[in-house]
Length: 67
Image (cartoon, rainbow, N blue to C red; front, side, top):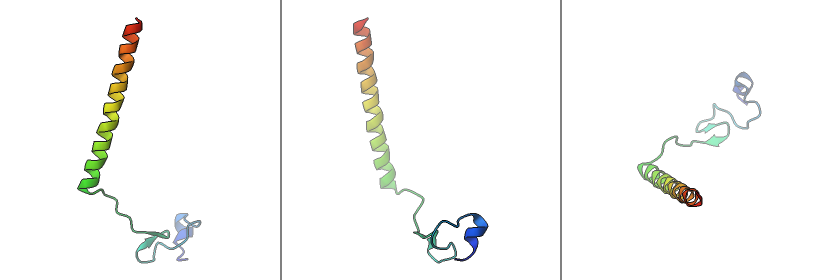
């Protein structure tokens, strides 16, 4: 252990932040999405909110019909 665990309170993690290519025993992970990933995520979100809007319209129609 490099000693940073005790200094920064990371003593329960394996690995060392001083090891090249590793931080707390985990490999490097990018923190940004590709253009394709952003498009896919937005398309999925759009489908979800369209389904919610449809459900709200149906519920509103039921309430008005029960009136």
